[in-house]
Length: 240
Ligand code: NDP
Image: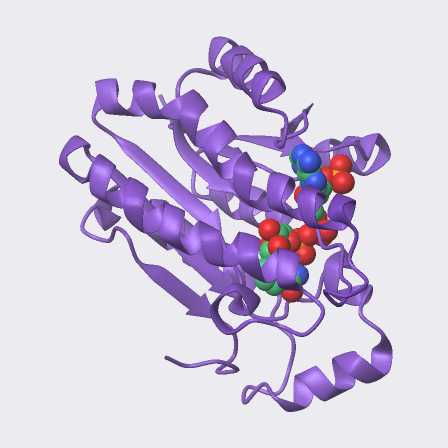
């Protein structure tokens, strides 16, 4: 039986590319999404992949939904924490709601989903967890104290959980994408985006598939010696 992979925020953008790639690799893929039913329905029609609506920032809802997914499809062996939002603004204008929404959706969600699957992974002595960070969590970004803090938190979360899972066959890695051509980046004003592209040595935005390919590698059964790492996928924009 093929391993079950759950991809949060899997119905569009980077998440959709991850779902498609993992399905191609033979996994049983389940996508999650937050609220955009129409996009989710189109996604399922396009890909044949089931999509479950639940808010990853809601602890109780996430436990219930993942239990349901495991009842329907089997134990989740691969978890990709990809769901994320931006609510940009400079600190002196940012509301508590902007701060809190980004921390809850991008960072607290990793606790909520991992908590739901980690005991099963430990019992089965196998797991692959990928947390989607960001170049802006590594380097910071003007107007994004909330997003940079959440993504930077993901990188620490990853290393701590990697230590806990290492003896139990569970690997936990983060990826740090640079700017990728999705709805999230299309929301950036054109002139700002043009400036950003000039800082990317490869000379273009990333494609969702660039990210998906790396994730397929990290979740492979044969990648069991890679854990606690952060893979930068940013066209050379930020190297360290
Ligand atoms: P998109 O905005 O294109 O898609 C976001 C996905 O997350 C959608 O499926 C959305 O569902 C889902 N989502 C949002 N909020 C919730 C929630 N509360 N509960 C469940 N699902 C939710 O994002 P991208 O594909 O651009 O980004 C994917 C990830 O990659 C994010 O974590 C982002 O921070 C990160 N990233 C993106 C970069 C980029 O340049 N695009 C760069 C670096 C990192 P729905 O459709 O229902 O809203």
